[in-house]
Image (cartoon, rainbow, N blue to C red; front, side):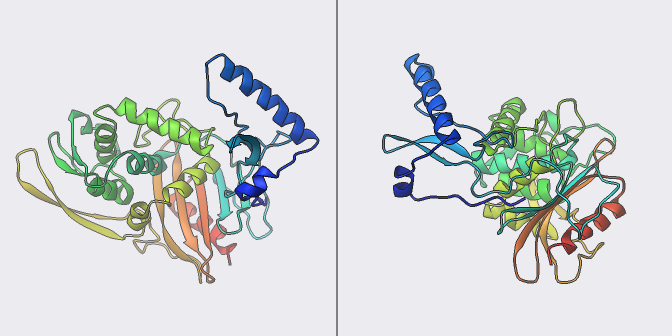
Length: 343
C-alpha cells in the first residue's frame, strides 16, 4: 500500500482551498474547535488522526499564520489498514508480520498488522525511545530493590540494589543483551524514581506517534495483562527510535564491554553479546542483504519476535517485523523470506 508524500510549503498551505468532503470536514472541525476554545477547555487546534475508514484520513487542521489549514498527517510514514499480499512472500506459522520500504513509504507486505499481541522484549524499543527523549546519556542511574526480578526465564544482567551506571551504559545492556533488570533501572531513573511515571510516558509517546493499538504496563516486556502491541505500531515506534543516533549505533554492535560501580563502591566489568542472531553469526541474511540491527524478544506468551533495519544491495533501507513465531529457527527463516523481497 503506497503512502503518498503530500508535504507542502507554508505558502502552498496558505493557498490550499479544499473542496467537497474536505471542506465539510474542515468546517465541522473548525466549529468543534471554536466551541472547545470558547469554553476555555482547549487550544485553537483540532487534529483528525489517521484512520483508514475516514474520508479525509490523511489530513489534520493546524494553525499557520492565523489561517486554519489542512495538512498531511501521514506524509512521511507507511500506512496499512489490513493484510497486504506480495507474490514474493508467503509466511505461515507466525502471528503477524510486515515489511516496510522506508524510502518509498510503501508497505510491501502485511499479515495481521493490527492484531494485538504480546511484544516480549520488543517493548524495550519503546523503553529506549522514551529514555533517549526524556533522559540524558550521561545521567547516572542507581538500581533499586526492584531490579530483583524473580520470574523464571527472565533475562538479567545481574544488577544489585545500589549498583550504578550511566543511562548510555544501561541502554547498551537493554538493547543488546535485553536485560530486564536494566529496563527497570532505566525506567525508574528517567521516570524520576517512579516506574509508573515512565510507563505513562511510554503510553503518551505511543499515542503521539499514532501507535494507538498498543498499550504498555512495564518497561521490559515480561508478560502482563494489558501489555500488548501490533506489528504496525512497532514499526512506528522503531522508525522513531532510529532518529536517535545512539539507538542506531547500539543496535549495530555485536558485543559490548563496560565497567560500572557496585553498591560496595568497587568497579565491576560486564561483557555482553547481541541477542540478534544475524549479528552474532548464528544465522545469515539472504545474499546482497545487509542487516544493520534490530531487537529480539521471546517469552512463552509472545513466542519468538524480531524487528530489523536492513538495506538491500542498492542501499535502500527497510524495516521488517515478525511476531509470534513458533521457534527461533522459524523466526529467522521467515524473516529471510521478508528480506528476500527487498532485492
